[in-house]
Image 1 (tube, rainbow over the protein chains, first blue to last red):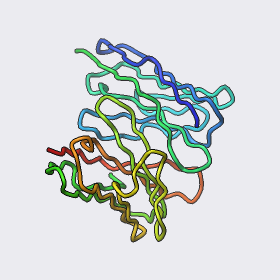
Image 2 (tube, rainbow over the protein chains, first blue to last red):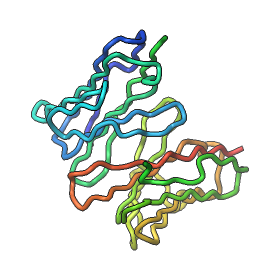
Image 3 (cartoon, rainbow over the protein chains, first blue to last red):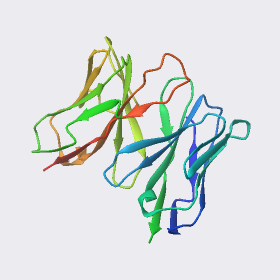
Length: 108
Length: 117
């Protein structure tokens, strides 16, 4: 099956700092989504981004499908940004394959 | 607002009992829903694909007799953990799509934390 690799596995930030999370995938995909899982386990859709660039407030994402990677940018980080960020990709069968996640800790 | 509702959010049960988890699409019809399992500090692993009106499709290594899935209507799928044991303790989360093609995101329920004592 498709391999989804996220880096770094852990990230500690000072409040106000910027950061970039990366997602590499091993095959072509129809869909790529970024999620934030909060401490209560809720998965929050951040971006649906099979290609191109999108922005939502302090977050933005870029997917370069031809090179099989996606980047999630967090700017001016806040403590509420803490949690696990997952990248998930979908091929031809509607099933999402998740990366291992990046655990982000933002310190005040 | 939430488009996929999952219930209960938390359940504690004794070994040997069965637990049913519901997943509902709130304002759309979902012919396909998915069930995932997540162990602490790990990623989400797909367990099975729930198909309305037909049998679920299970991923390799998932016991279909252990994890019964029923998708009786276009807005409801249920996962029943039968004869639960402590190793079944985990976070279970469902997803559904309102899509008819590959051009819209999958939405997730808030998950169910199962503890088997």
